[in-house]
Length: 298
Ligand SMILES: NC(=O)C1=CN([C@@H]2O[C@H](COP(=O)(O)OP(=O)(O)OC[C@H]3O[C@@H](n4cnc5c(N)ncnc54)[C@H](O)[C@@H]3O)[C@@H](O)[C@H]2O)C=CC1
Ligand SMILES: O=C(CO)[C@H](O)[C@H](O)COP(=O)(O)O
Image 1 (spheres, helix red, strand yellow):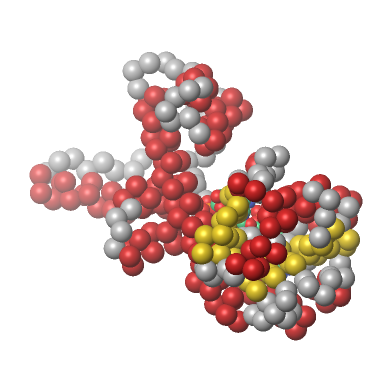
Image 2: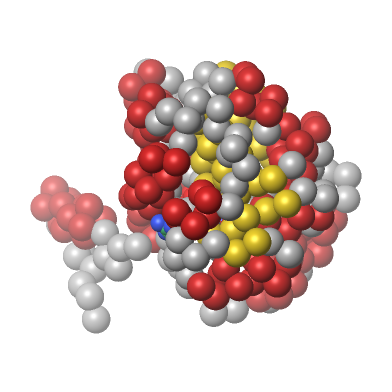
């Protein structure tokens, strides 16, 4: 089978490599010539533009987009659209908002599959977990590619109609935030608590048979091993947050309580503030009602 891949960054190169390793052909394009050259070295057929890319694909085009979510997806689809018809399949494997995916599925002539991709660059060896939404025939047509990119046949499934794949991935990321927060709080208590503990040893012990063992906990173990039990100079700053924000917005709309996911998201936002206004005001209000001393900045 032949697959065209657009977007050859951290994730796209893995898609290329895994599909090539499974014995399929790949045509590759990226705005970065360096990224195209890397894919070509791995065995992909390089393309120099979207038009050139489309001209190298078979009549029934099978395309995987792995560009950043948002404008890049729309820009790529705008350029691809004149080359697409109803026999073609386009997969968006990025972290797009599910409503954008529904809109794009309606707008294009091709069959559109929204594919939530989990595993990250670190999961390259094992393969990814793929959550796919869109027409059943298109999912079936892409099965050899999904088998190659995922951990295998059990690593992907069709979640439902257009949007459902990215919807499930959005919630997956919300769960990811809450799990990270829970591990973070537990290790913070251990770090600041009564015993002088080696947190790498704690994580390793937990990872061997404990109820709370997981890949994220293995990554905690790795972090303590590589950064030290006090995390060295790793800053109190967490970036990102779009998928968690969408999860909380959707939970509010559906009136489903997700306090843990919200709290984890709020902690991220809080990590980017040097001095929280609300806490400074609380500091001053305690003086207002109780004549408690105001703690002043040095
Ligand atoms: N890195 C991760 O852990 C994961 C990322 N994702 C999602 O996968 C998608 C890609 O992520 P990464 O590979 O990490 O990003 P990246 O930034 O490493 O790579 C993106 C690539 O797309 C190319 N690109 C941007 N606009 C383009 C355009 N209009 N036409 C052609 N190429 C274009 C860039 O040159 C770059 O090579 C994003 O939606 C991301 O949210 C999903 C799961 C995990
Ligand atoms: O989807 C992912 C993991 O599952 C990606 O790593 C994503 O980039 C995480 O972004 P954010 O931290 O902003 O949610």
